[in-house]
Length: 110
Image (cartoon, rainbow, N blue to C red; front, side, top):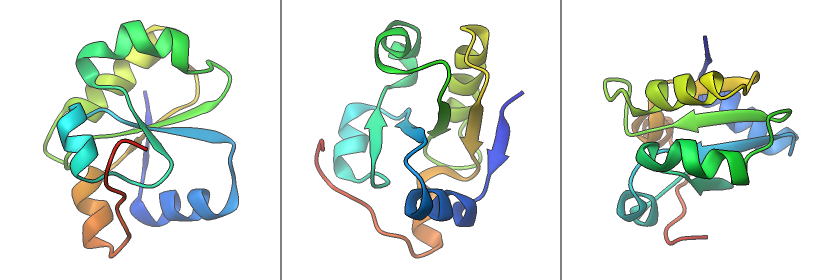
């Protein structure tokens, strides 16, 4: 089961280490409207196909979605774990928690 991560812990990881990949599982249009810095976009519907090519099973993968009530990040974490990813974390609260904590968003598809 994926480990839940708080906005404070995610901010700390972004500041301190590059040893993870941050995945926004929302749609590409939502991603372009605003996302957490250093995140990549792999929508939940494309997770099985794209994760195999774009993610490393030995690296920590942190997934996030829209908010705490939206199940996309939890579903994405389960998909990754079923594919053999062992270090999966779910950023609890998603993009809304990030914004509420006062942290910056990035616009565009970078």
